[in-house]
Length: 290
Ligand code: SF4
Image (cartoon, helix red, strand yellow):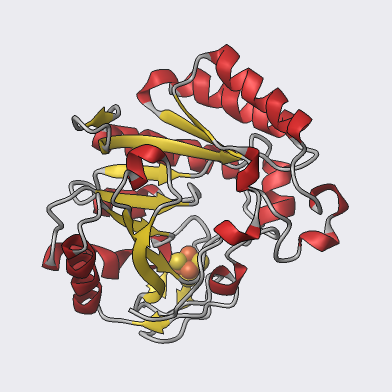
């Protein structure tokens, strides 16, 4: 196929196993880990875990990515849509609260096919960078129950500098608009496990509290209580962060408290992480298997 799937619109040739586009991936999903995961927001992980499928490759190139082994080095195993559907069944049988598809944009046609082969009886979570095209999201309408996008930057120049992602703010806000249109406002079951809705994640970067505060204000102004906000401080310099002195350290308590204060002042609904989360021990291990 000639691929123009994501906002990159590479027009690149992709076969099942090879791709010459920005994401570097073929069309068959490459999977790095399939397992219950307990590190998501409480309403996603609950007590029984979230049934995560981590996909390899990414349409962004964040210099600090903590999952760079799979996002940039593309490690993993290629599987068919039918095998992917089997992964959902296996996870569901383990009793997880939901099926959580992590960074699947560049495999969207195969992911849609897998969900048509087997639509889980539990909510499907689409966990993505937020740098996503309406074309991808429209295909997921009716198949996804919960969207979990990132909103990383309020400033396009930072998005270019750290993630090589032009027109980031407009792209991410258009994507979140579509997500809310599809799944509506947050809904929970009697155990406070999310069944429908959008949680927007924002990772605080060291030396960039202004970016974070501006992100929160954009979310307030555009979405307010239509979404939940998950404020994250788990940043640990990874990948190529050592080439960028401002982000080559963890977030300080003072920086995080400043951003948290803004979140509370804006009265946004959501979650905050404990600073102790900024530890490499919370990065999943990749088994490159199904
Ligand atoms: S999915 Fe990959 S190949 Fe297709 S447009 Fe995006 S980056 Fe390019």
